[in-house]
Structure formats: C-alpha cells, structure tokens
Image 1 (cartoon, one colour):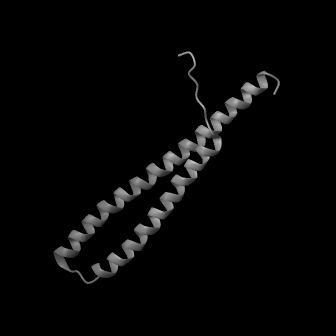
Image 2 (tube, helix red, strand yellow):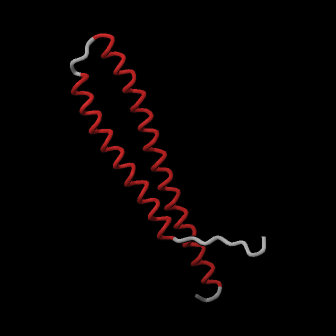
Image 3 (cartoon, one colour):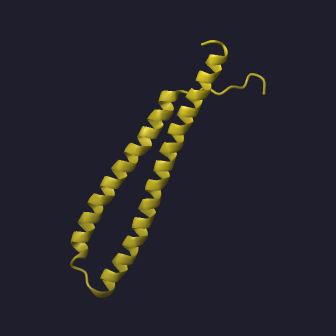
Length: 98
C-alpha cells in the first residue's frame, strides 16, 4: 500500500455531523406538522377507519423514530471520528516536538 494515505478534514466531519442533526430536526418538524394536520382530519373518523389509522400511525411513528436514531448515531460517529483524528494528529505532532 505504498503511497496510500488518508486525508481528513476535521471541519468537514463536524460539518457532516451538524448537517445530520439539522436534517433530523427538519424532518422531525415536518413530521410534527404533518401529524397535526392528519390528526385534525382523523378526528372525524370513527370505527374501523379510526382503528386502521391508529395502527398505521404507530408503524409510521416507529419508522420515523428509527430514522431519527440513525441520523443521531451517524452524527455522533462523525463527531467522534473528528475528535479521534484530531487526538491522533496531536499525538503524532507531539512525538516530533510539535
């Protein structure tokens, strides 16, 4: 693997983490807005229609929650990677008296 190297931009990693968090927040807000509108309409439903809606809403809520968790885990992983790369760079610089 001669000539192989990894170039890391700490700010790009942190920017990616922030972007994931921002996207998660935007998705959360849009889903909250959508839920409010649908619940307004669903308030008129009765019987089987209401039960079917509730069942699907629970599935949707679970999937949306899973998406939020994945985005947060990605953001955390990116932040941790940036921190580890910075720590490694500082340790390497210290070896050479930097």
